[in-house]
Length: 226
Image 1 (cartoon, rainbow, N blue to C red):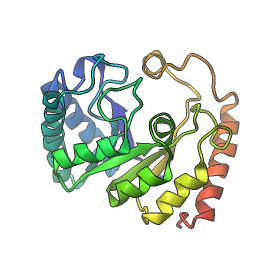
Image 2: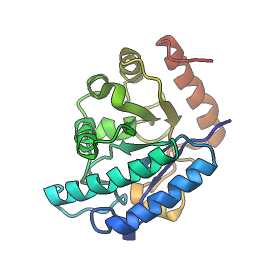
Image 3: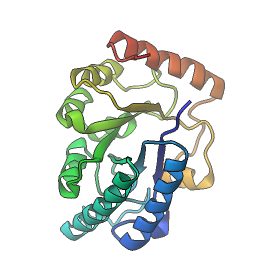
């Protein structure tokens, strides 16, 4: 069994406010990820979840993030690793809410080992659908969080899963996917994601039924590989 690693930045290391601290943190995270055998570091690597300014990102903030992540990507490349930038909904971040904004950030970073990470939960809030953003992101997409509209068991909510997997099939997706839900969360995660109630119930049901559902949909679209 292999590992893929992802994270969000601590509050005092929100990248637009503390780029030097965030870079040092991410370099350490890359070291640990490499030791675990992960080929990548992904997630909210540019922001602290829940840090909002009440305004859209400024050009200076976007440039600060891009320049910092460029250096982080170069550090990752020295380890034969890559990084991914995740889209997040407007209530958790003001930086990259849409797939198109993630791609714009990748243009600013301009490193061959910087890719997109899309999350179906955040897409349910921000996008007009799933298929078109996935296809538009294309080969830049290397990581996907498969998460239901309420962060509960996949297949029990509002995400149009056939559109998700049809899009992945269309682009010939060869990256990593992970089922993301919240069976057990600590206080930091609760506060960052506003998880005030149990959305899963039985964790065994999440693992058994959720994974079976996703594998079935992936198989229907020819995306399961030995």
